[in-house]
Length: 438
Image (tube, rainbow, N blue to C red; front, top):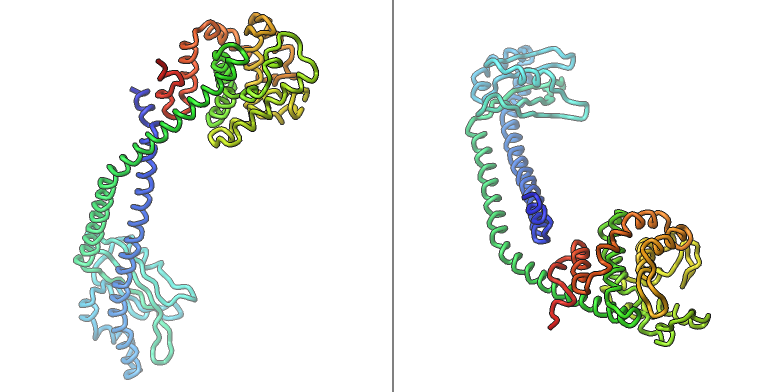
């Protein structure tokens, strides 16, 4: 069950719709934030209007009153306007002078402690002229805690602090508006997703089919070209399957990043593609090569790079193995004589796999060596010809690799190879260079 779920979650279509869902979710959040800010702005304008309507009445009348009746105090003014306080849903009001002396206080009903605490602590900075905070009193009613500086006719400055009870119908209206918008946006987004799903799925399926055809064609070309060189050089197409399989297993033991495997696989399969330009008299010579012949055969690297230069699927990542798998750790290799970690990682991996298969295989110019003899040669040349850490890793798997695949027929070896390659190429379970043979 876990394997099924894991396979499903790794499917490209699942990942694709996962990305689509993520984008829609982000758009949903942005939409709600935009709507919320709009509603908050509308609510803020309503509250500001309510405050202005409430306090302006008192402020104007208070200034007018103190101007006409300077001998009267502010307490007397509010005594005359008690009913007006109640009519404006004011449930608490205070006026404080600059010395922090309370000039007037009005309390209509007891308030919850959290409202009272905010009312006591709310204050204005030197740059502020007003401030408000809205807090819930109960499930249906909110308290608007408000403070503002006011000035009387004789230029005395007071702090006016009020708590206004917002009518329940106002709160209900705000909540209903939010609910309606939430439901509307959710329905719209759901309809968008439902309507585009078939279109996206159809287009994605068509894209995957085209991708599959292209990949199948590319991989068949890769295998056909690589095997053609192997047949000419080694009398068998099995060489490319083995060396690529060895390289994959070594890379896995070394925990090479998954994204690097396609480059290793393609490069391994085409590592000697340039030998098509080498004369048979040199390539198949049973004896030792002369200096000129050796220099001539080295040109297969240059020929190989030239052959893949115009093939976009190959040129970006395959070149590193083709170009550098004959380089050596001590700098004695060719074509550039680079050494150590200057040699690309995939090329260092493949160099071990290629030499090991060459040693255990029969060639026109040599008989095969045993696994132990071949492995001893590689170990003796650790840190000379080969990366020593890679030699250690290969030593742990060399015998099992030989037992696993050396005596297999071509069809069985090809299947083993494709099973190893499958995790690193999309749809490779549908691709086989020999699938259409008659």
